[in-house]
Image (tube, rainbow, N blue to C red; front, side, top):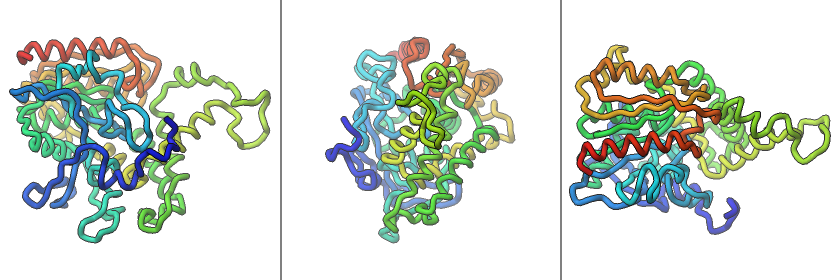
Length: 389
């Protein structure tokens, strides 16, 4: 289906009234945020797949990465495209929806139905914009915990996710150790590196340098910082790939021409590809949400809450962990995963670790990777047997 199809949903409408289910919370269930702000009217949009068993013991929470959403295994109403992890989730797949009840929620600060800067501030009737409080990974997890509570689920069988989703997995295990039976953090780290913060800052500056950003008030003023957000996406997308993957896919091939044009047109296929990635991204993602969610990743440092000792975040945990990294991932290299594993070992946790061979870079956790599928299937299967599922 074309992204320009008139049947597709309006992104701004989706920010407040999503096509997916939504849980709404009032003053009786406020969201206490790390920045000190209390949200007393907020909502979280989510999707579920499969059936919750009578004991409510087969729920798997899947946490999305930076630019993901709740449509993990179903059609996105804005783009018309399939879910972002359909390779992993579905009937008979490693996360088997014939066996498990899968939940995926849009993060707080997002733009696909969960309260964020694109949402309407009930106090003003206008979009929150930059008046929305700054979000952390722990805030995202608190919001997810409220959702899980509203579904009547006390303990999650598994929490799984990659990249920023993996950060949420680790935060879940640290914040709610008695509610997580198994944890699957992929291609992630227990803190954001200086290099990753630097890449995010370049992206944020690209957004804010766009004249149409209007100091974050573009929704009120009827504009959109499409050029700045597109550039931010282009820069970030490079970090998700490996040099090998770029060379294999594009090399130095020219785009629909026999010779260079001696201009600043997209002469090379890789240039055309990045421009397409940027342009398609701005159709579905809010620019201010990009600022907020990247900032949440930057602030993430799980050890900082425990006097700089990561192992203390997992003291006494009974959660089973499977940590996985990819050989060509330079955004979250294997050293980051090893640091998590060492901390878990120091805490006496049950943990397995695998470094998966792949030349696809950071995005490998989203792609067709048979070794990842086998690892996930094996870990979840063993955990399910241990829990009697």
